[in-house]
Image (cartoon, rainbow, N blue to C red):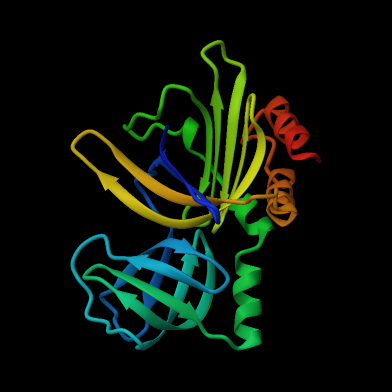
Length: 239
């Protein structure tokens, strides 16, 4: 884990954070008009998503209306959207603004679905190394990740919860803080595969973000984290 380039102004506090990247994505989008394009969903919220092709390039233009199917470990959702920006392999799209459509997206992106689809990366034998002090790592593709870090003596040192654009952290000696994720980019070198996030730290702890994290932790299955760890996180979140 790396914490880089703290930038402070009178108006905002920005931090860069680097996290290990899971090499597979189970949340995908298949576009109706482009049968050969199956995109990985890199980021998603109630208002839109960022899509990426693992290989090749797309030919979808900005302001193009697209329809397709979001698929996520057996869960499917029909969506319609407008392309807001493009690169050779990526798209940023905004979901249809009709209330019924947004309601379906919100149901799809429920905390209950997030908790049900969490995977214990720290238990997987996938042939890539994780940071040495990362004790637990839960993930459900684009929307959610939970990292629990430990001191050298094994005591819990920090946890970080990413839920779509929301970031919640507790750190030993510093306490609880919340932030909004402003941007994310891939870092690929011959030795590491990581994601770099820029977050905007809330000047006052955001209760809505804390409530969201609390709801997620309360729905985590017993076989994903130890009871001791879950109770510790709940205590620090004030549950």
